[in-house]
Length: 230
Image 1 (tube, rainbow, N blue to C red):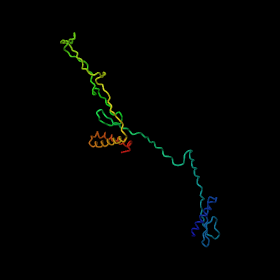
Image 2: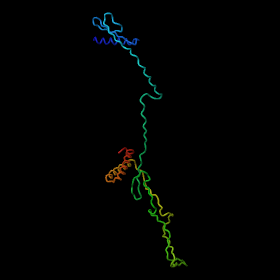
Image 3: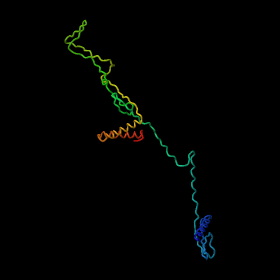
């Protein structure tokens, strides 16, 4: 208890000394003939044992910088996160096409697989020029036909249906009928194609494997973008 009172008295004297205007502070520790200890800011009385402590008066630090005023129209707090820009695009369509022979295939465009074919493959006859046969002359007299040896006979060409004139190598583009598939069917067709690629991959040649691998990568990316993943 005695030590606690001494500490309290020391603290009070220190606070009083620090409030003084002097730069240096002297604390007096006085002990009388009975051993009683007192702390004071003035010299001890006559007959008391005196001990002194010199202390420096603390100085006030530099004033803190005033906070920067908030900018007009902005609220205090952390800076907002940068806005995320998302680009939405419609799913890539897929078309089913039918050839004149009834074969079906899929295409990424409504054009399907247009192909150039010669007209003769479609049943159009080639133009035939008249030809000549040597060895006779043809004469018509009074409705009678006579052929003279050693002359040339003109033989007319076979009779064909009348078509516009066209060169022998003329042709035309053949386009199949194509229609768009619903998105659910598109995703199902893509998954079926990927399964087919994986089955063929193990028996394929190295050059074909590269093609199959690239095609599967494209299908995976398309499934991720348009079909919600695998």
